[in-house]
Structure formats: structure tokens, C-alpha cells
Length: 379
Ligand SMILES: Cc1ncc(COP(=O)(O)O)c(C=O)c1O
Image (cartoon, rainbow, N blue to C red; front, side):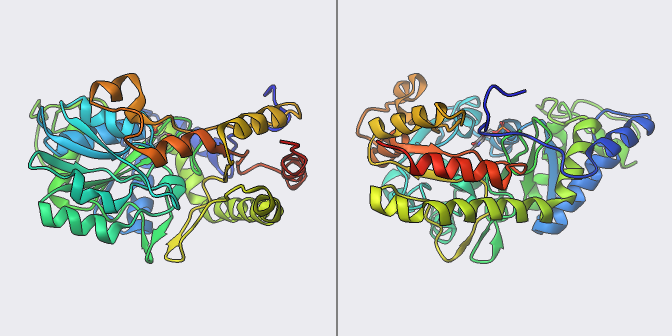
């Protein structure tokens, strides 16, 4: 049991998870790319309209595959937001890339597309926008920039499955996109991810990279009579146990999203007036973005108040958490030239942002306690 009366996250089963795991075991094969993996692939391909979806062991691994597919060479520059998770950039650095950190927009907290023309150089190879909280980046202008400079776009859509930008699903804009099924995400199998491929040119090589650099996928389809080592790669495919769990979650997507929408809207209604009076900013979702209700955050007026609110909630058994530290100011970021003041919005937001408990099984009564505790904050 959690030490918290109301934790920040609590993973739960939402449908057929345990039955499907038993079915996988009864099927007699638990390694990757069995029937449940195929069902997950088909569901993602149909729901999103992507050429190919490939389950991976994490979003981090999907990003690593994307970096290999992008043929990143030492010295190539890759533009990433400074406000993101380590893996968005580390996957490319592993291949020798030099990260170039872009600041974020103050409204959506997404990579500020207006900065791109200043950051792109002759060495830039790829742009990696992150749809923070599942609210779409300004993809029209990002894709326009990429086209003008011949750059590859990899969407880090770890938060954004089933979100949309101008009516089109997130994850369908870049040549490649990545998903996370980590336990904090809307849909999970504990640890997991997916690579979405929109440019069919990448499909065959992606299958090889995911299968240890072999053409085993072609062998299983009967397209070659033996399989062998043909490229670099690793073991990026999850077991059928994970795929079975994940398929049950994806299948229950309407139920999950309805519950999450209710939670998000309840926070919004319960905290709107309070936030206005206290100078606290709630999430901004532009009209042309449909969010997947991944997260509810508050932007407090100062670091001091953010820390005080975390402590106040903790005193009532409620776990609220901050989010990314500015990547350009991390030990690694500094090695790549990051310095204080380089990404001022990221630096400020990182100090002021607080995420409230948000999970499928959060009850109305518990959520009411969270809202009441926030409203009672003396700070
Ligand atoms: C934006 C972003 N990208 C990538 C990841 C890594 O995901 P995973 O834990 O599935 O590797 C995370 C983790 O939460 C994330 O927030």
C-alpha cells in the first residue's frame, strides 16, 4: 500500500488485463511479437492512421530507435525543448548528436517554434518536439521549418496518445513518433512504449533494429528462409505478457479517457476561481488542440509558494510533484554549453510547476479532498 492517502499516481487494471495475461500464457509463447503485440499494433495503426506501429520496451527505446533511423552522426545537431525528460535528448546523444536546447512557449509549455529559425544551423539534422501534457505543439510551423531545411521531425508523444492538433492525431505529424506506456501514462503496461512510423521508408529498417539487427521479422512472415545479422540493433520488443496487459488498456480507451476527462474538468471547475484570486495559472489548451487529459498542473507565482503547497498537501497525505528540471542546466546539459538564462521560460516554469494527483481510479471523494486542500493553502 502507498504511504500516501492520495498518491500522485496509482496504476490500475481497467478491463481484461488479467484474463489476457492468462490467455497469453495458455498460448504457450511469451516472447515478443505474438498475437497480443499484433493486436496492439493493429489498434494503434487503425486508431491513429499511421503506416506502422511497433511496440517497444519503453518510449526511451523508441526514441533510441528513432535516432538510429535518423542516421545521426557525431556532430549532428538535434533541436529539443529544454523542458522535457532526459530520454528525449539522450537517445540522440547516444549516437553522437550535439543537443541544441530550445526554450518553451509560456502558454502550452511546448517548444517555442518561433525560436527555430535562430537555432537551425547547417549541422541540424532533426527536430524533436514534445507535446507537453498531450497538448499539441504548433506542428504546422514546425513542419514548415523542417521542410524548408530538410530536417527530420521525431515527435516525442510520450504524454499525448489520442490527443489531436487541428483535428489530426498527435504522433502522425513527424516521420517518426514515440509513445510511452510507463505506469504514469494514460495507458500502461508498467514499462513500455511504441514507435509510430509515418514515413513508410523507415518500416523495414525499424523492424530490423528492434530485432537485434536481424531480419527475423521477415523470416516470421515467410519472406526469407533463414534470418541473420543485417544491421545494428538491439532488443527493443516487449514480451507478450506486457502486450496482453497493454491491449486490455488500449481496448478500454473510451472508458479510461471519459474518467480522465471528468477528473481534469473537476480540477478545472474546482480550482479556477481560487487560481484567479491567487495569481496561479492553470493549464492552457488552445482551441485547435484536443488534449488527452494526461495531466493537471498549477503554475504557482514562485518557487517558494510551489514548495510550500507541496508541503501543505503532504501534511494532508496528498502527494503532488514538480516536473522536469531544465535540461540545459543539468550536468550533461552544461557540457553542451547550457547556462543559466539561456532558456528563461523553462527555468521559471520548472520552479513554479506542480502536478496534482491524476489517475484513472481517483475517486470523486478523494479528488474533492485534493481540491479542498489546495483551496485551504494558506501560502
Ligand atoms: C516527454 C517524455 N519523453 C520520454 C519519456 C520516457 O518514457 P519511458 O519511461 O517510457 O521511457 C518520458 C517519461 O515520462 C517523457 O515524459
